[in-house]
Length: 517
Image (tube, rainbow, N blue to C red; front, side, top):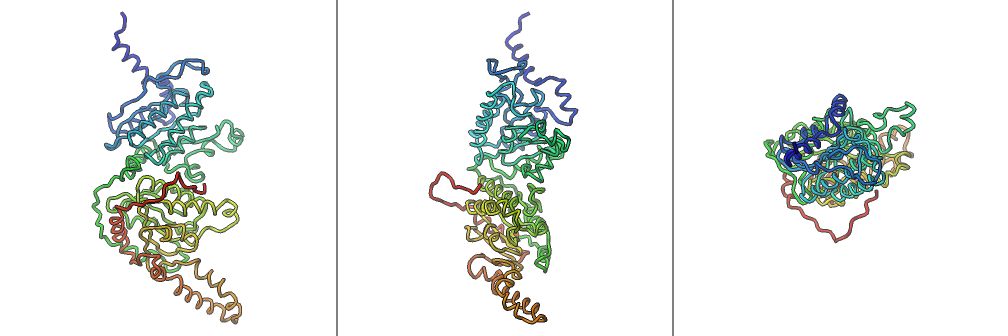
């Protein structure tokens, strides 16, 4: 009996759902990973997914050596919602040619990226594929190039998140790293630009693929992983949490949530948090959690450049981006990695209209041959550039040290920061009083009797602190808007944020600046 057109549709539709077949899907599940459709169901609200291009397959002309035809060509694309918010998404299907990216595979993703940009909604990609498909020849590179161009064009226009839940190799790894935030699965998430099968250290057994490009490596060494997920469900939940701080597109405001935390709540615990000794460490995260709504701070890149903390929180129900020096790691000094980490976060927040709140306790840039030869000048300039370029509301709270060039780079008043305040414990100076006195008064100290050297030095240190380091000196010059009691920090920051909500900046037209990359 001849099939009806409806029968044809259901038959073809079922084929598109099969992917690489039941046997390959079961093998994927045994490895602890989900299939592409299972991951999308996990990510999106129930029954909200609408698939796009389910019937696309690789070209059947003479582009290269093709295997049997597979509907969908190894990637599932479409749109749906997360907590009621519309998003576009895609998930690579490892059961089809190992998730490798052929020409039509890449063009499918490029199409959904362009659709997301037109609709002005976020994009989430689930990456799990073995690089460019050799069977497609150079055509796979052509499709991939179009995809990469679309991703670059969307950058800063819509939020883009990447979930890396399997091995991602080659140019596909570049695509995943173009996202604003990249989340790697702890067990299976891997990123490689060169295949581990071609890496001498892996081939010789010195390193495993996980040592070369696993989640922990990219979280602590390369700085690619924004967060590490315990499993695939956790990865989806982390993506939804990040998305809750971000707007749909660059012209929209971030989503505001009802705030039950009293905006006038005093932070009594902050009165004794900073140690009396300027050289003793404390945890800046505790300062942040004390001030923000409900004590919730979503820290990002927490294993990379730990001497600076970045992440999202809320004040008065409004999302804010937080940058804070961490005194308990390298005394909070800025180094190459910290500068890069903070600069990109600042530019991301600025792109999506998220106010910046800086918690400052910085003794300077980290000295040393490694830093100087590694380009600390150029990388430190990135941080300064990012702050100066940002047009969102910029608030700065100085808790203790603000020395030298690092003070200038950390959203100072001279870089058009909007609201700068300090605690009474703050010191604003070219350098610490001890170092300054040793330079300025070295002859006087050297001329003193041995018994008088230390008392003379201590007297000069106190004089220097009173003359230059006291926060009221900076306040008298207008470089601080106020000196506040620590317990009033939350109340003062919220008040400033409210008045700055209508802030707009105009700059002369230009194509773009030239950040020192």
